[in-house]
Amino acid sequence: MYRKPELLIPASSLEVLKTAVIFGADAVYIGGEAFGLRAKAKNFSMEDMKEGIEFAHEHQVKVYVTANILAHNEDLDGARTYFEELKEIGPDALIISDPGIFSIAKEVFPDMEIHISTQANNTNYQTFRFWYDLGAKRVVTARELSLQEIRDIRAHIPDDMEIETFIHGAMCISYSGRCLLSSFMAGRDANRGACTHPCRWKYVLMEESRPGQYMPVYENERGTYIFNSKDLCMIEHIPELMESGIDSFKVEGRMKTALYVAAVARTYRMAIDDYLKSPDYYQSRIPYYKEEIAKCTYRQYTTGFFFGKPDETTQIYDSNTYCKGYTYLGIVGEEKSGTYRLEQRNKFSVGETIEVMKPNGENISVVVRSIRDEEGNPMESAPHPKQVIYIDLGISLDPYDILRRKEK
Image (cartoon, rainbow, N blue to C red):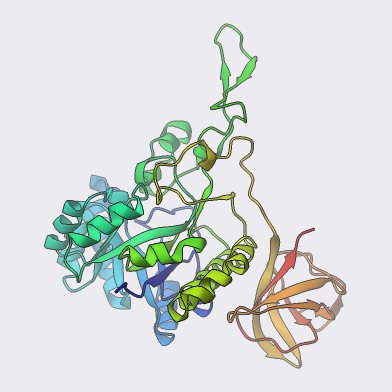
């Protein structure tokens, strides 16, 4: 019998954490202001982390905190202090890759659940057992594993040990994300949270005696973005994932918007629940899931390593731009005299048709009836990012509904 998987969703900020919780996450993973691998994300202050954990726990959702840098000597004392602070606010687990950081966490936080990050290159069952014997509860598989390899790991590890696996999001050109390219090209260490994503850049070749004469670098005839992978998407393969013994389905994206998180969390939530109710019903809904998952930004989709080694079809050679079907407009706040508070994210106007995205899977097309500023003055449009406005869409809204506009 397969296990009911946890749906684990990323959050870059308190707003996105709350969105993930409302739109279907079983657990959320976040980073503090240090020791995580997304230093350029907004990340969480201790105050926001405390509020986020309380909000999640009120909705029976867990929160895991990343501390998965590959630490240098100067990081160790700070890690100890950081864990002492985390102890006060009570996350559900820490995500760690470095053995030194792991040992400090066990010392400071002896009863805390620890998950071993994919950065630790977890490619075989003996590695899983090694971490289990040291006290880890869960290990995140390397992204380079097939479903058959994951099934073999499940067969060779204790039943109460958990497997977490990335099932959606950006892929990295480097083995389990352990990249040196960013350090070389930009002086920013990807393994300490400062990746500049040079794998998405366009490269050319120049012969030293012909300065200024740039020749394209082709991996094949299609183009010059030689490291640019498609994004992982397993929405069509929930049965295979379920049968592999994975305990937690993990979505990549701690740099993503609330719209992205809502769209991905909601779609996978529906797909998992539908499959558990009726495999046939799940199969019949695959076109709907694919349509919904494509409404957030993405780089075309691949199944990664799950069904064998990727080939040239998993790369995008001619561009590094995202596919974008919808624009994020904002998250609905409290009601006031028949209007609803919104912190605007992109411009929209009175008379425009937009879409209300609800956590239960509903998408409601509406026309913007009115926009007012905080003083109640009418506005024709909302052109200023993050401006607080009050809107009338002609229907009742709920807090955390998301507004988006379809791009032509």
